[in-house]
Amino acid sequence: MTVTDAVSPVTRDGDLDALLVRAASGDCDAFVAFYDATASRVYGVLLSVTGVAERAEALLEGIYLEAWERMRGRSAPPCPGMQWVSAIAHRHAAGRR
Image (cartoon, rainbow, N blue to C red):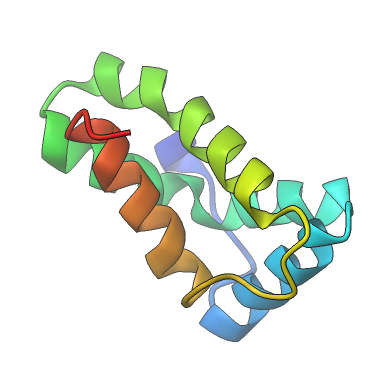
């Protein structure tokens, strides 16, 4: 199974934001749920910018590592969670970390 095969039960922005709020307080399970709910869409962003599946796959982990680190100590994501992680992905894919 690839990241694009995953089906997520969490799809609403409010649900994703709630997961990030929980993750900010150190809830690893919430962050894993956020990853599971968004990874296929983030991979799509990466693939559309890079045009290379292997490059998109290689960048994916770093995006979520950055998101995890940036959420620490926050009470909420700076904008809707999916939009925020997509912006991080776009920056990584374009080489502007």
